[in-house]
Length: 303
Ligand SMILES: Nc1nc2c(c(=O)[nH]1)N[C@H]1C(S)=C(S)[C@@H](COP(=O)(O)O)O[C@H]1N2
Ligand SMILES: [Mo]
Image (tube, rainbow, N blue to C red; front, top):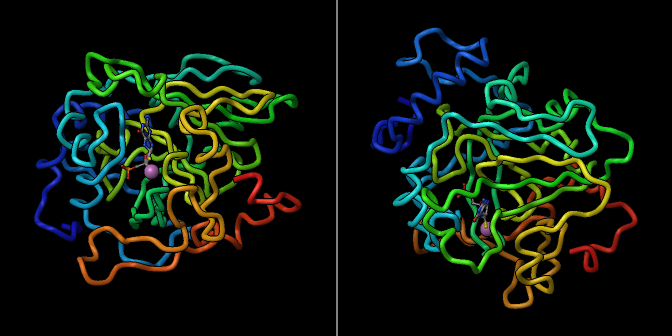
C-alpha cells in the first residue's frame, strides 16, 4: 500500500467512481485489464518535485469546492452524491474539431503521468499533491486550435440537485476560469484525472480538473464540462466577484500581497501547529519554467 496513512481507497471512494474508472480504463486502453485490482499505472514525470506529498487524508478532507459549500470539510461531506459517469466535455469556439467529447475520448491517446506538484492556495496555505494527469496541450493540439484563439475558458458542471452549494447565488454559476493560450499550452499545465495513483476523488474535482501549479489554487478549476477557445480574455469567477483582489493572471507572487493579507509566506497543511510556515516562492517555485511567459509584463499590474 503506498498511502501514508491508514485510509484505504474504499474509505474515500464512493462506488460510482469505481464504475466510472472502469470506463476510463476501457477508454485509455493502455491500462490493466482487471479493473477491480488495477491502479492507474502512470509514468513518473520529470516535472515532479522531490518533496514528500501530503497524506491522502489531508488532500481529501481540506478542500475548496464551493459547489458543495464554503467550508473546508464540505466537499468531503457532500461531494459523494455527484454523478461522474457518464461525463462529457464540450469543446468549442476557435477549434477545428468542436464537439461534445466523452471523457474516455478526451483521455484517448493522452499519456498519463504522475506529477508531484506544489499547490498554493490564495488563502496562504499549501500542499504537495501527487496528481495523475496529462498535458492540456495534448488535448488542445488534438482538437486543433485556430489562429484567432488567444485564451482558453473553462466551466464547471452546474447541477444544483447534486451540488448543494449551487443553491446559494453568491457565485454566478458555473464556476469559470481561464488561461492565456501560451499558459494553457505550457507543459506544466495539466488536466488531472486522479491522485495518489487512483481516480480523482470527488471532492478534488472528479472526474477531470485543471492543475496550473504556478498560479493560486482557484485557477485550477474542478469537474470541467466545457473548454472554449476564444479571442478575448474570458470572465473568471473570482475576478467577477472581487476584481481588486483577484486578477486574471493570479500567478503565485510573494511580492504582491493580497489587499487583505500577505502572500510572502504560506502554511503547509499537515505540518502541525509548530512549524510548517515557509516562504512562498516566486511562481510557486516554477519560476525557471514559466517566467519567460511574462517577460515585459508588470506583475503588480497584471496580478
Ligand atoms: N469548480 C470549482 N473549482 C475550484 C474551486 C471551486 O470552488 N469550484 N476552488 C478552487 C480553489 S480556491 C482551490 S484552492 C482549489 C482546491 O483544490 P483541492 O481541494 O483539490 O486542493 O480548487 C479550485 N477549483
Ligand atoms: Mo484557493
